[in-house]
Length: 402
Image 1 (tube, rainbow, N blue to C red):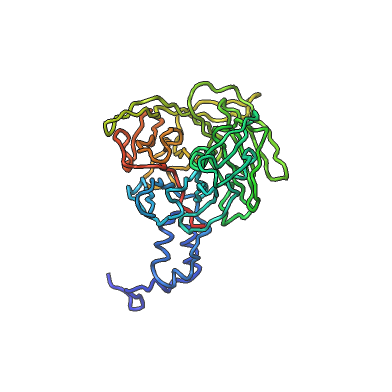
Image 2: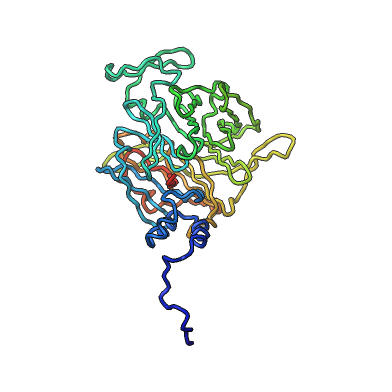
């Protein structure tokens, strides 16, 4: 083949027209591809914003427990690599109690609460632990009894800084990315009382949703509303957009069995995921520990077309992958992420009492194959050998640069 004299063998990619570059970058769906695109040359970098606005939800990374430095490891289970970020904000004196939209919700012993994007380091402060309605008093100098609380039955009792950091808040979720939506709302599940509490960005205290007490298995946000699920499978629909919260209910026949419930929203339906645990004996370092191990998951879809709403068990998720734990429960399509397989439930340990500071972790995490009912370990965390991972347990985190 003879090249035409008018055709240049050495194409200058930096001279591509802006409209073509826009077409290319708007088709990118992976954050890594976007970063590689901007690294090609100065003209490509200047033609695209440092913070992408069009990327869909990314495949979660597994945030690993802290080591001796301020660097935190994030495990990508597809390429089997650990990416490190400098994150002193997640120090040993702090615990993250949630992960939503690429942001971590962190509670400190101080007793502050804040949300942070690990990629950008942008931070938003939330009302501190001392500003919950059931906290009667906080005195930093009452060592070992810094917090005074009142139970729903009127009993007054004390808790120290570490107890409040580790066990007061069970899970926290945010409605949207704070960088994109300055009116984001944070919802938390309280561990001991089963209360739901929320605050809007900029407010100085937390409010209880009294009508939704004990809907404390899981909570998600979808199209302007929070959905909280009861142990029985019933859902409380919470609208907190006004000055006072309003609650309606999706009543279903009682679900029997299982140890934990998760609520997940896919593209077209709600799923209820029931997790089954059993006691196990962990022998390590010449000592015996009683731990919990996940043995099974069952998945149900919410059927709304019948005279009465009910949960219908399904045997396959198809191309869907679920990510469950302390993170906001998440559903993604495996076909959107090369190297992934559908019909799997990826889970982390958000149950075991050994999740507290100072306890070695043999954390209960991996993925469950819904087709055959098998549980497989992730390579970063062997399931049947004592792990060197320490507190806090791993959590799913969706990288989001905005």
